Amino acid sequence: MKILYISQYFYPEVCAPSNRAIANVKHLADIGHEVTVLAEMPNHPKGIIFAGYKCKLFIKERIDNFIVNRVWVFTSKKKNFITRMLFYNSFMISGILHTLINRKKYDIVYTSSPPLFVVGIPIILKMFFSKSKYVFEVRDLWPDSAIDLGELNNRFAIRSSLRLESKIYSISDKIIVISDYMKRTIIKKGIEDKKIAIIHNGTDEDFIGKIKEVPSILKEEYNSADNFIVIYAGNIGIAQNLSIVIESARLLQNENIFFLLVGDGPNKKELEKRVNKNSLRNVKFVGEINREKIHEYLCLADCGVIILKKIPLFKGALPSKIFDYLACSLPILLGVEGEAKEIIEKSGTGLGFIADNSEDLAKKILYLKQHPTECDSMAAKGKDFVYNNFNRTKQASKIAEILEGLLETK
Image 1 (cartoon, rainbow, N blue to C red):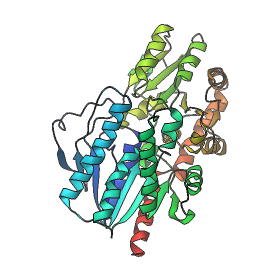
Image 2: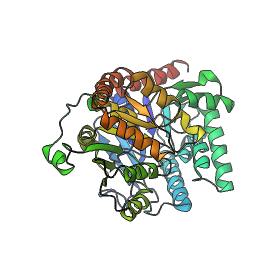
Image 3: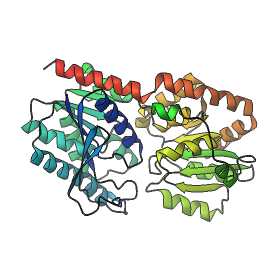
């Protein structure tokens, strides 16, 4: 089976979409399918093209047993409406151009979103390669979430996004979502139930299997023997509402509780200013850490925070960091309602807090610090739970079955 896998973000970029994409691609290639990835020149999250990819229009490279075609994108260190639209649309245009020049026919065109504008590529390809099967993966209900967060407020852009969303749903032979809530929401938009499949987020099998070893230099740097360490690892953006975490750190600055924020994103500078303004010595921004090293930081911590802004759409969110935390036996403090909360409650691996309430988060952190036996009990349950229920290898197998089933219906 010849598969074109379209994901704007891809390895060596470090982010949830990239991690999910490479896990799926590797599995599909390992079981014998001919997989070609279409991705941007790597630049995330800083908006700076990585060394070796600069000043190129197209690059073709082999990673393991699959091909990656990379295309030019507009990038900028400034993140605003105009630069984001140029960024997203440049990938769409470059991707269309490259694929039409290439003229290769695929059995399956698999497109992962957001960003939503990536769907312009399969929409155009459908006109030229109508016999291919088209699969659309929805990891976030975009543009709905962008509108609710205020990231998308231009009327023309909103109308264009909604038209793109409607079109990709209509031309897709299968739609893959990550939660029950997402499926219900898309059905309300007029899409048939049988067209939609749920494949949850997860974590990599080798990540789950890593032994809990933390370098002594890391323990000494953050004084883990005396400090209760709280970690957030992921994108530092608008949706994450991390100002609540910073305010909790201010409330707990005299409690031997240390906060590590690992990652990068558009809100990082603003949060750093807030930390400096309040002279907080119990907060450190570590920056972006590659996936090979992030395991050490997660295992160093005593608990991990996951938070999203309190808007209705996020009730269907299943942040992939939930499963990375669990894989490292890290108790979770969760500021997300809906299915994510149900998972934590079902597994007994953490506590919920009110997403927009720093005092409630501070209270829950202090509770875990003061109840080490309960904290250890939560930690012990995580690894087995995520291996049995949210293993990316098993999830990639389900995706392979869906794709193979589509070809059988030709």
